[in-house]
Each structure stands twice: as structure tokens, then as C-alpha cells.
Image (cartoon, rainbow over all chains, first blue to last red; front, side, top):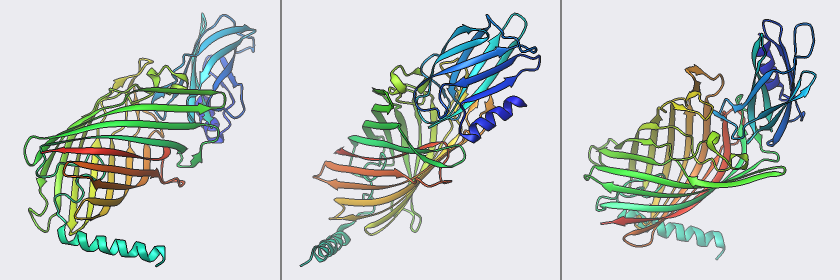
Length: 124
Length: 303
């Protein structure tokens, strides 16, 4: 439910620069874009992963897919993920190729848990 | 004589001349869309060049938002052909070449390629004046090929080499046309049922079924050599399905208005032109780009 409300809020508010969500077994995934008002451009998305105790999760396998669901296509540039340390990961390039609602689907996998979250952004 | 009076005089003379020789079969054959063959033609081909400029977009709530830093221009060269199988039935094909230019901030890109081609057939079920007072009725059946490059297969910056949607789209439609002397009204409707395709990310996707309608009204002048018309159009598509599940709010509504012009330059050659613009008003559209532009072309009829 928190994921759904996250997407609705970000899309509806039109800001869409960051978001937080937690999966059922306590894996907390936060994401923050490098711009408050996302534009048609290449962006960095910082993903923060912590466990139920608030400790950073390192060495997680993370994949990110940038897509425009309402138009039925993904971005033409593949986002790559690099670990920055202390549970922080950089996703780049998050390329929005036209204005509209985009979402970044972040899949996090650790030895014990996995999480799949969508972060929505209104791009002007 | 003032200029407006001179203009009125020209229009009046054109009207008199037109009234004397209008032919129901041919008033709008070359006016708007692919058109149709004139009764004496075996085939026809045309080449046209259009330019459309992106102005803004309707979002999923129907709010129209002009573009800020984003700019988009599309040049489209279209080669079309029609061939008569029978005096009632023709085959048609349209092959576009698309050049797309996008820019935003420091990013810009230009790409080109073959667009989505169309193939189909038209059957004139009721010819002009055949069953008065019924209007002429033409039926269409065809499909759009995924010959263009879909957005997620694009390689250029900002996906500016996108030239198509990446799906087979069967189409079925009709065209009703009523002619009164030099005046005509035409109603077109085309239903589409896209076939599912596989996206670059491996997911199966099917665009929503759609219907596109157009209402044209026009008049011929100069013994049908000059035809002018205005039109309104509306395209509606249902939601996209990904892996069988509908994507909420992904339905599309795209309204617009246009004007068409054709001028016969001889027995075989016709100059064609059109203008088109979206109706950039809140709540009229949904999930669609707001564009405006126009094109010019030349049509050659074989007989």
C-alpha cells in the first residue's frame, strides 16, 4: 500500500524528486533524484537501502529500469548501478527522453531478501 | 476597388464557374488522407513532405501543458500509391520516411529512418449518386506494419531516431460522403486493434484498441480543379496492456482540427497541401502530444 501511495503522490504532486518505500520483510528502499523538477535530461538517481534495524545494506544487486508506462516504452538508454558505500547506490543515466510521467523500477536483491519498487516522476 | 471587394469578386466568379461543372465522384478524391482514385484512373501516386512541431502535451488527467525547455520537430516524407483492382476496389500503400529532432537543455539529437508503413484496400460499397439519397460509402481494411523504429529501440540522443510504435496494427474503417453540387461532407472512422509485441525489456505489450474519426467539409472551385476543406478529428485509444495487465490511466485522446487544399495542375498532376493542429485545451485530450504543422505534396494519376 505504501508503494501505491508513493507513486500516486509523486505523480499527482508533480514534484517526484524522491521517495521511500519499505517491503514486507523490512527492506527499506529510498530513492532521490538529482533534481526537484525533473527535466528531459540524463539524471542521477541515488538509491539508499537499509534493513529493518536501519543498518545500511551493502553489496546488494540492484537493477533499474526507466520507463514511460503511459506511453508504453522504456528509455532508450540503459541505467547502470554503482555502489557508493554505506547502503548508497548511484543509478545513471536515468534518461527521460520526453516530458510526461516516467517511473524508475528498482529491483534490490540481497542474500536474504529482495524488493521491487517503482518511483514515479513527472518530467517537464 | 478595395482589396476585400476584389476578393469577394474573385470568390463569386469562382463559385459561378464551379457550380457549372462539379462532379460528385471527384470533388474530394484528392483532398485529405490517402484519398481515392477518380473513375478514369488506373493508379495514382503521391509524394508529400510535412513538418510538425511539438507544442505541448495533455497529461493523464487531461491537463494541457505547453513544453518548457523541450522542443520537438518531425519532418515526414510520405510516398503513397493506389492501384485499381476493380472500379469499386483499390489497393493502397503508404511508406513514410521520418526525421525527428529533439532538444532539451544541453541535450539534442536528430535521427531518421523508415516509419510505420500502411497497406490496405478500399471498396466503394455505394458509389456517388448510386443509391440516392444515401451517401457514398467506402470501406477500408488494412494494417500498419512495425517498419519504423520503436522508442525503446532508438539509439540516438533523446530517442530522436524513433520513427514508429513497434506493433502490427490491423485496421478497419469506413468513409461516408455526401456531395451537394460543389459542396461535400465526409465522415471517416477507422478502428484499430494492435497486436501484442515484445518490448526491448522483454515484456509483452499491447497498445489499446482505438478509433479515429474525422469530419471534413469542403467545396470545389474552378470546375473541381481547386478543392478546399476544413476538418476536425478525434483519436481515442484504450489502455496499454503489459504482460496482460492494463496500465492505469494509459488511455489516449487526441483531438485536432485541420484544413486541406488540392489544386489540379493538369490532367494528371494535382498539388496537395494540408494544415493540422491539436486543440490545445484542458480536458479535450489525454496522454497525447499537442502538435501543429502541415505539408505539401504532388499527386500523379495514371490513366
